[in-house]
Amino acid sequence: MAKLLLTSGQVQVLLSSAFVAAITFFLFLAGYTIQQRSIADLKSQLKPRIPVAPHSISAQQPLSGPRHPSRLFNPEQNAIVSEHTDSQQQPEVDWQKLAHVQIVTTHHDVCSTIMFFGDLARLKSPARRILLFPQAWAMEKQAAKHDLIDPYMDITRRLLRRAARRYNVELRTVAAIASKEDIGLASLWALTDLERVMLLRTPGLVQDAEALDAMLAYTKSAPMTLLQQQASGLAPEDLILATSAKETHRVLTTNALQNITSISSALHPAYLSSSNIIASIGALHEASQPNKTAFLETPYIRFDDPKLPGPEWEVEYSRVVQARPEDKDADWLWTKMYGEFAGRRYDVCGLGLEVWRE
Ligand SMILES: *[C@@H]1O[C@H](CO)[C@@H](O)[C@H](O)[C@H]1NC(C)=O
Ligand SMILES: *[C@@H]1O[C@H](CO)[C@@H](O)[C@H](O)[C@H]1NC(C)=O
Image (cartoon, rainbow, N blue to C red; front, side, top):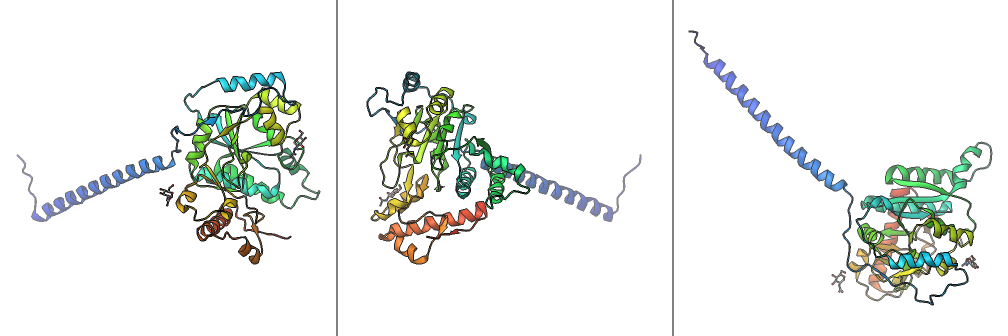
């Protein structure tokens, strides 16, 4: 019978090997647990924030005016409107059928719209993001070699690519655009692969995407929903919810209804009663001791300021001083928001402010 005889040296080697093996194993275990935990963290961080249906968000009954058809209104459309007002559907939310949309027609506005999408992406909005831009911008590429190209085209292309790559924005072209303002607003109703789309006017800053998504998902269905004008500095069309439908789009385009005035007189919009969704920078001029917390928690801050051309412009310092709100708190908010806009503009678009010339 062979006996296994070990010298004390060998025992020591064996023991210390066992010790090292045990330590290695525990280290591995610890690392593994941490890794699993951080993967779970990462997963929960990457998950889109799905808003829960709020109680307060509902559109008020539309049709404050007379219900009889307007001149711009044909019988077919009556059917559309009443069908929508009758339906009370509130099914499971399919985020693939909902989108935040921006329509851009000038190179100047491209950065602001992409900042908007950048905000939504950063805040993990689960809805789709769609940017509509003139077909001509996509066509110009082929002609670009010898012809004089728009100097802004390069920047626009770079920004569009970045929007698609970084912020998951779907780029879509729209055909010829008549007027510079209110371009092809009717194209909102042409997005029939979606159920409902929301257009917020830019420039602005998104502070809370969840509230905007809740509005997009849970507002009662109507062909068109606008903002009830409660705060100064805001316009009803600062927020447009559109229920896309082939028939509505056909009616709008055959009657050449392109601008907000003519479209809303045809569609009899519903109005959102919720007032705490958007705040205007311009309203700070009349504010006295505004609640700073409440202002900073507003889901969307819209830059519409009667005293300055826009947050993307750098104006003379003396003019800025003149434009500042008189109230101390309002001034603090105003200055902070303009500064934040400039910072995000640089982060998202890589652009500084543009110099304003009278
Ligand atoms: C809107 O379009 C209608 C015709 O469709 C026109 O009569 C009206 O002047 C336009 N309004 C604005 C503000 O452009
Ligand atoms: C300001 O708004 C916040 C959040 O909306 C609220 O909790 C707070 O009570 C308000 N403060 C004042 C002084 O009204």
